[in-house]
Amino acid sequence: MSQKNDGSGLYIYVPMILTAAFLLGCLAISLVEVREGAIELSSHAAVSQSELSPKDLRKKSAVKENGGLKYRMVSRSDADSVQTAAEVTQSVQETANDVSSEPEQTVSSEDTVDSVAESVSTTVETAAPVTEPVSSTEDTKPVLKLPNEHYINFTPPKEGYVAYLTFDDGPSSNTEEILDILDYYNVKATFFVIYHKDMADKYKAIADRGHTIALHTYTHDYSKVYRSEDAFFNEINRIGNYVYSVTGVRSRIIRFPGGSSNTVSNHYCRDIMQTLKVSVPKKGYVYHDWNVDTGDAAANNLATEKILENVKKSLTKYRKPDILMHDSGATKGTTVEALPELIEYIYSQGYKMERLELDSYAVHHDW
Ligand code: ZN
Image 1 (cartoon, rainbow, N blue to C red):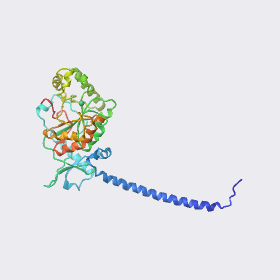
Image 2: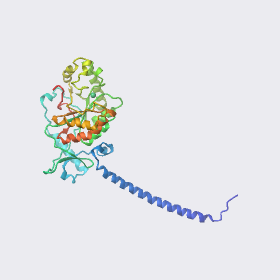
Image 3: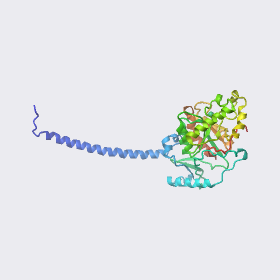
Image 4: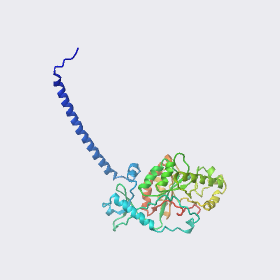
């Protein structure tokens, strides 16, 4: 049976169409409102980012957004007249130029390795921290301005006071985060690496982002590393060649597993450390121990407070502290957590932080 079309459908369809049009209009208006709300929300987010606490600095998004922008030193009274990013970038470049024209820092003769002509990590430019003059008055303290309106206490580096942050045993799942934190603070560090499978990009990132990549043997296995003098140099050659193959950097800087004063090696070859301490420099390498121990090797995820306490109790005993840390993934997560505060403490104590170079001062345990 066919339905009869008598035109009465109009009475039904016309109101329906009008109602639908009205509803669509309402929907469009509410969508605009939602969008505006989102914009406002994101601007709120921007404001709250500027109030980041030091612990928030570990958030990668905040760090990465500001990866290229470093810091400048201002007095608190200048803090409100902060420059634009472009101005800061220009001042970074100007200061870098000034620094590059200055004579190199002299080191005492016993710390200089004359026999080694090859330099380490030459592909990387040294980005000097920006320490613009402080327009200080009696009641202003110097501060460093970091991205996101983050100010930290700062003591202008005293002549000859240099701290070296060193990370052993990496790379690891922590490497990227460590690099982000170092970038944020405009700090260059040193990574004593061993071989890890499927991490070529991390070795490369360490070198590409301006840090020193140094050698800590291939296996880190004492029974192999310290079996004989030849075995040791075989380990060093293997990791050295691997690092070169993935980074293009030929490193001549070494840290012995366990340090030069370790006694465990005697189990595998009696007095081998005495032999190696002589043969390492003869073969054109320099080795570095440490004089400040974060203690992060003593336990898995040592409390951040303890790590900081360990540094604070010994850092200022030295003009050139070499600070031992570990880049070892999940078991050393607290090392990464402590790093921002640790760096801020070092800045507050009048040290600059540099990566190790071939002619850097070398801490040796047998002083
Ligand atoms: Zn180690």
